[in-house]
Length: 221
Image 1 (tube, one colour):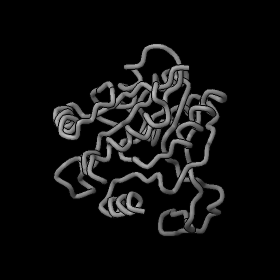
Image 2 (cartoon, one colour):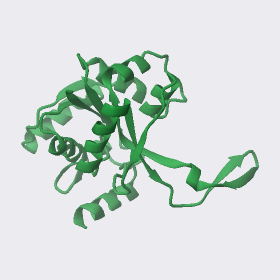
Image 3 (spheres, helix red, strand yellow):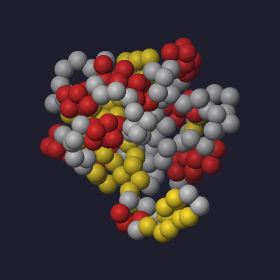
Image 4 (cartoon, one colour):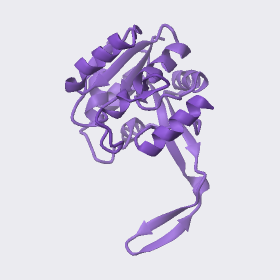
């Protein structure tokens, strides 16, 4: 089955307090986004890459590719006004069946093992969603009250979220809803069971200055 990866990178850098979008900030001498793309090519050399970027950021990205001599082949698709619309634009760029992993552009430390496992499970069961167990205690807030809940009944969701293309394309035909916090929630709306696979605590999403400190620690460690 042909494998695709849609890398969604629509950040602005506001929470990072950065002058440039977070996906373009350098760690280890090159932009975060390049690390993310390289992770997928390392897992599957024949994988087809679709990069979803805000149209206004495309010239800057092309300049970075030239500066860093970044030659990994990828198709650029303009993003939408929301993550839902951006992913949908990426899916519309795929013609034919197969498997597609949808991944946050600012998760550069995803492992080869997780990527391969996500495609394997999605091929067998229709979808595979990466997650990790909670480490901390959590409480449920309701108005002015709160109560402890069993953290073992919850998991933190990461990417990749990998799907059979025909299935996820059909799911994205639905009207956008604020309840769609990720791609799995869109598929779930269609009545499909979501299959969780084990993620990695190093597979962080870099969105704040604190995350950037951790990212550099991971690279150096």
